[in-house]
Image 1 (cartoon, rainbow, N blue to C red):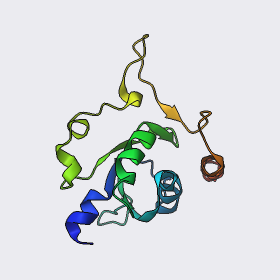
Image 2: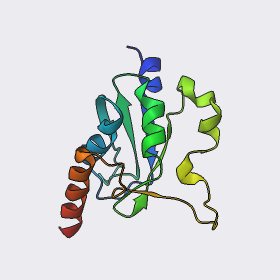
Image 3: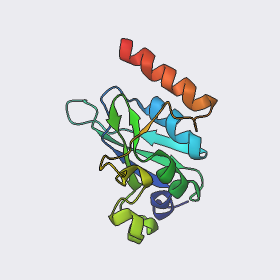
Image 4: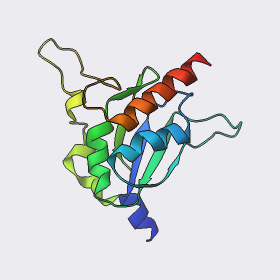
Length: 138
């Protein structure tokens, strides 16, 4: 598995709240398939940046995760999920322009945002939502 291969298995996630940890990101993104790691870079002062990466074990999980999790709200912020630059997915039509259902307007002109309380959630996501609430209370 080379660097190019890792780029094809990696998602770029932006608009992260400062309360989102690598562990929370891991628990959220593992919903789409087995992960190798998650990473939220820090600046020179050690402050967490507002973007991160999720690296999957299998490339096939990447487009599925993007479709599933783009537009999800975590700690009140809508996540924007896209293919990592440098990946072979980078030239696909959906990467240059975000066309996920979460970004299409509804008939009333408002953007749809996935919230972690929608009925499609499984038990793991419900546990993650509880962890988010506990973190918000701290």
